[in-house]
Length: 443
Ligand SMILES: [Fe+2]
Image (cartoon, helix red, strand yellow):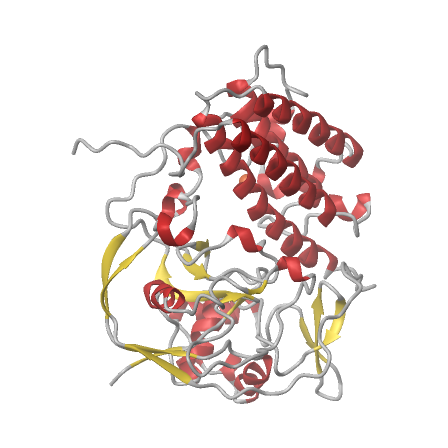
């Protein structure tokens, strides 16, 4: 096959002119600043914590994001490039074998030096140098624009990880420290679950610049037709109240509800309730949140569920998880007023919120609140080609033993997601804001 490898993300108007260069500089400053804003509630000691191999210290996120720009932008475009510190090339390389050696992921919390202040100085210097490269860019630097855009999308991915990782780390502290002070839930009310029907058919899926904007990761391409059988999708997310019913019905003790691997996972981990949940002597459930320990609200979307839990919960409910294509079809059918709107990180809630305004016409909460597990394996689309060069390691090499999640969460920047966006995690991962929307077949 003589296929041409795609270059990095396909952009419209990628070639910078003066106005585009100025916009790029502002966007760079804004997104980079948002990351530093996220650590303001944290102490230097908080930023050092690593609670498990899958999670990284906030300090490491800050440094790694800077490493990305230093390695992929400054090394490539800065005249007379010199590294801020040559040892950082290994310390803060995540998984890029093409770049060279990597410090072992499970031990990132042991990197006590450089200090947080030194990492922030690293960020400040690299930011200034990237701004210098942007301001010096001429009309031939379309590649620079592409790498800056990718670096900022990468930055936003890690902003979410920084929040979920710090929640996991703080959960081990018996003082139950809060990241955020404001608890966003007041009085809530149950909302009936309805079903929305879709005829399906042969439908095109994947990134479409006309629909999805100017950026795509390579894993959202190429756009391709998929046959979708008629199906129904729930009007809202599964709630904590429904999860409590599942538990009360012996959900964690009934092997018939679980996939074989899921049941092994339940038994090996002695799971009896979701991550962060605890039950007091009166049978009242509380859970650890970014606002510390809080009562479980029955009308709020359930979250921090593994794929195994999501699948068992759906089976108990007499339904199933949607495929990623069903989800995308439904997302594309949303009215313009609700497409890509929702409870993202910008609301400051840092927690899923109950369904607010039930629509009879379309499902709600498709975007934001919680990432929605799909039953789709994270596979390459037909004809998929990773980007060429070092950034070709970004997505494609993870297409094994993971499942796709859609829609973004309360920790996701709104400008980061779109209908074609594919998040992915292994089936036992619980620490993301991951939840469930039910689907069912049409008889
Ligand atoms: Fe990364």
